[in-house]
Structures are given as C-alpha cells and as structure tokens.
Length: 243
Image (cartoon, rainbow, N blue to C red):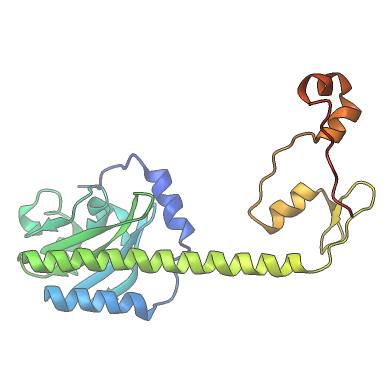
C-alpha cells in the first residue's frame, strides 16, 4: 500500500529544504544517535530517514548499505503521517506492508518502529527508525528512549541551521562595515559589480531587511501642504540628523 497523501506536504518539503541537509556527507553527531538507537533497541538496523517528494534519504544508517529508497515503499512515509510513533510488530501481518518489496526482499523488514522528526513549526520531515528481521516489540523504556533520541536529531538539525544563519549574518555585517559608494543626489548605492541600486534593493540583497514607505513631516509639508495642515500639529518641527 502506498503512503497516504499529506495535507501539509508543501510546508513539510519547504521545512526540509531549509535545513540544507539532503545529500550531505555523514556526520558523527547523527551517526552517534543511530548507533545508540540500534544498541538500546537491540536491533540490526537504525536509520535517520528524511522523506523527500519521491524518495527517502538516509542521513545516517546502521546495518544498511543503501543510502535511499523510493518513497512509495517507505515505511517512514507512513510514519510521518501520524503524530505518534509508528510500531509494526510484524510486517507480514500488516496489510499495508505484507507485499512491500522491503519486506519480501532485502532488507526483509519484519519489525519497524519509527519516531517522526517534528520541526518547531510542527511538520514531520522524516523519522528516527529501528528495524529488525524478525517480529518483536519494544519495551516502554526502549520506546521512550527512542523518542528522546529523535528529539535530539531535530535539535542537531536546528543547531546546524541556526549556525548557518549566524555565519551568513556575520558575513553580511562584515560587508556592511566597509565603505559603501552612495550617490549624493539620488542616494543610489553602487554594488560590487558597479551597478547602481536603490537603498531598498541593496539592503534586501545583503540583509534580511524589508522596507515600508512613508513620508516624513518635513516632506509632507513641502509636497502635500494641504494634507500636512490636517494631519500634522502646526507647532511640530522635525529635526533632521546632521550628515
């Protein structure tokens, strides 16, 4: 049986993309988590699986050689469709998976437990899962520990994203520390390629800045005196900073 269609699929895929984690090399922080999951649950296979549009890709894996499989046969694609941990004691007794090629062929999955990796925005981008070649169950303590390890996976993803955003912000601040050529008349700014940009376009290109537009009191009086008479107190004078 194919995995269910998710109502928040676009939001979920965008959240996954923002982590910039897909197809990256192995990392010790994630490999330590899968190693612990396999040891604590006493299983031969443990995976950090990230579910993309058409595939599931394994950021970390224990006991499995392949790095990805089709989403259509993915157990994890079923797991992310529900808020709680998905436990399949025996795949041959579950109509959703009895004919699945991952059950009938290598890696011959019989037991599966997958904890959704839920982001702070509330979407599941994948799972931390454990797999066995024979039917079994997890103890309550094993299940609780597996769920705690899944939260650590999300924390690692968040830490990496925050670090990347901080590095990007520092780079932009470093750029802004230098001298910036600005036109004395129109106040346009020249970029590194020699093109003149408006202040708004320059700031948008080098920082997470959005502008709203208004009219200061002095320009209101000069350009729209009738409106200024209504909106501005007659005794107010706006002082401009010295250049």
